[in-house]
Amino acid sequence: MQYPDYDHSIVSIANSILRAFGAECRHKSLPLLDRYLDKGFKNVLLMLFDGMGTEALSDHLPENSFLRRHVADTLSSVFPPTTTAALPSVETGLTPFEHG
Image (cartoon, rainbow, N blue to C red; front, side, top):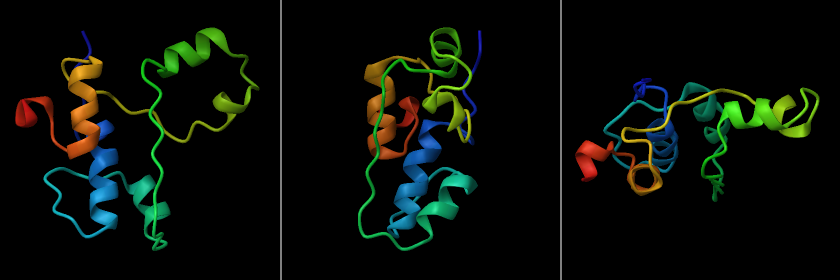
């Protein structure tokens, strides 16, 4: 079993976006994403591909494919790693324990 690293997870994505727009953050943000968001964008688009982890990419795409060549980082999900737990975490920046 692999446990989530909430300091480097999808929760951190939400906290980077919250931080960029001056909202309260209860968890760490992602330094890599923060560097992009520090450019003062007015709008941010987050696309979430449910179930498309790095294992799925490496199992089904060649190494030189567009998506594999452009992987900037690998993050963990939340626990439990289900859509119904993960989506509210991305929407709120909170862990499933916090948003229930």
